[in-house]
Image 1 (tube, rainbow, N blue to C red):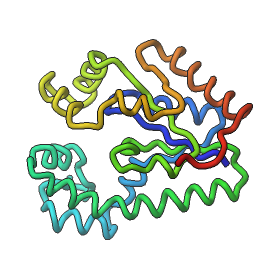
Image 2: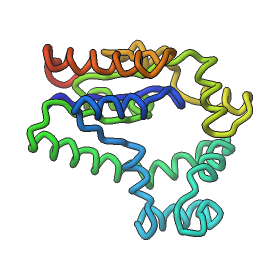
Image 3: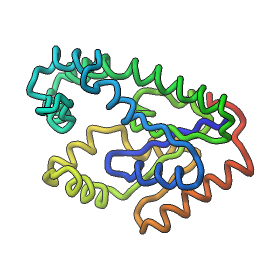
Image 4: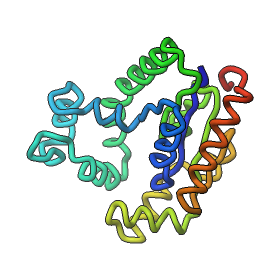
Length: 207
C-alpha cells in the first residue's frame, strides 16, 4: 500500500484536498480527528487536559474548546504549555495512526492518505512513501485564516509565522497542490496525483 502524507500550512486547504482524495476513492485518515478523539469527553486525555489547563478550556458539554486552548497555548511565550499538550495527545495519535495504516493495508487498499499538519515539524517524513504539500499564496492564506477563525490581520500573520515555513514544505514534497485557484482546479490537481500514483507507484519508504 502507498502511504501518503498530506500536509500544508494553516488555512491552506488541506481538508478540502483530503475530501477530493476521498471522492477519488482514496481512504483518508485525519491526524486532527485522531487528536480530537484523544481528548474526547471521558477519555484519559481529557482528564489530563483538565489537570494541566483547568476547567476554562472546556465547554458546558465537557468538550475541549479547541479555540480557547489554542489561544492559551499561542499566548505562552515559553512553549511549555504546547509541549505539555503534545505529551498528552501525540503518543495516542501515533499509536492510532499506525493502527489505521496496518488496518487499511490488511484490507487491501492500494493508496491511503494521512492528513498531517505537523509532518515536517515532527520530522516524520521517513514514515511515508510520498509527501503532498498543499500550498497557497501568503495573501490568500491570511484572508482565509481571518475569515475562518475571526482573527485580525496581525493575529493571522502571527499564527502563520509561528509555523514551519511553507517554502520548506514545498521543497520537501514529492507533489505540490496549489490552492490559489477555484475548486475545479484544486480537484483536478488532486485527481492527477491519484492517477500518477496508480500508474507509477513510489518505491518504498522515504529515507
